Image (cartoon, rainbow over all chains, first blue to last red; front, top):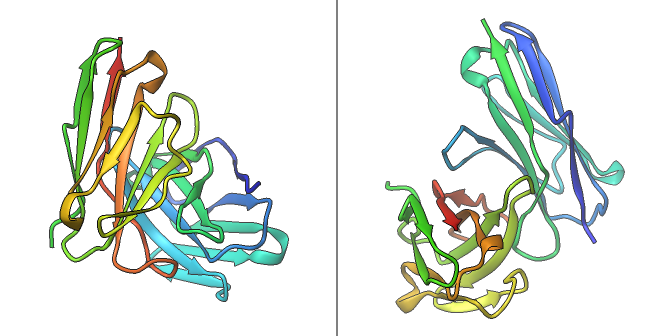
Length: 111
Length: 114
């Protein structure tokens, strides 16, 4: 049974820091992995999608890597800003179409 | 292009009542998914439609939940009768293709059963 874990559960950093959010999964047989952002009371915004054949994806200040064999993904946020404060979720797509989510990392970036 | 929309945004009902949630996917997206997050837990899959057909309903908790997608457009999720443990946030997502595509999520419906 696929399980997804995110560490840390919460993170508070000063503005400008580079930070890394971690996601691990127990079964390496996945189609892809997706990182989302959720603001309080809002829906999920897709940030990056990494196919199983890819090693990383970049969008602006965000870079996500995938090491399928070790069951790990990281989301790197460069030069963090207060507007980056949100909950970050990773989700894997196993052999079916559903997504399996982690419990998220709650990030706070203070000025 | 409009995103995934959900109605209502919030619903408060009493145990034993019926509630119907609606999801309108992005136009042209054949795949529609329902997920939910109950308090303190991770988001979990409920079911998946391809057009009007149920592709996977392995996540539906019990037969009090009924999902439909008439004509392959919008979808409804009915809970009848609602129980306290059904409280949570119900998300809908859609995608154009299946395995390779990003799933786009709606804002969710926050359901509270008293």
